Length: 116
Image 1 (cartoon, helix red, strand yellow):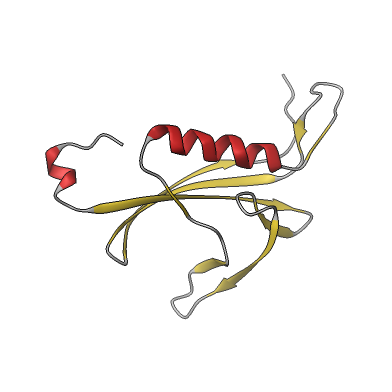
Image 2 (cartoon, helix red, strand yellow):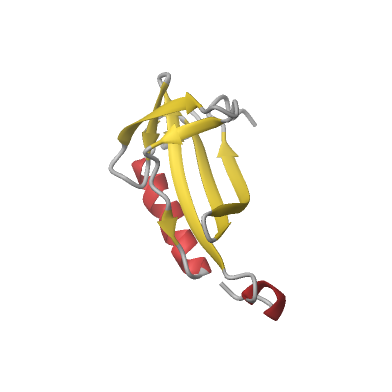
């Protein structure tokens, strides 16, 4: 990804994850829909245990992961849409400086009625 000189000096690493919530269970969309566990840690923060974080270097890497995960999502047919999502999905872009979390951006798609 193109960075300004200011950000290059920070030495950040960027990775992405993609998971779905379907039928009360959580699945990793970047790891053949592996079943994941969701736990609360000692800081009372929710953690998705075993979630794959794929390193990315450019925008194309991010788009490839979105396509890969979207292809794995649970879908079905409705009267309005032949390929309607049946799950909630969360795509996250995570930046780290060393081992420290620097930032996290989450894109969330909620399943439900898509009435026009």
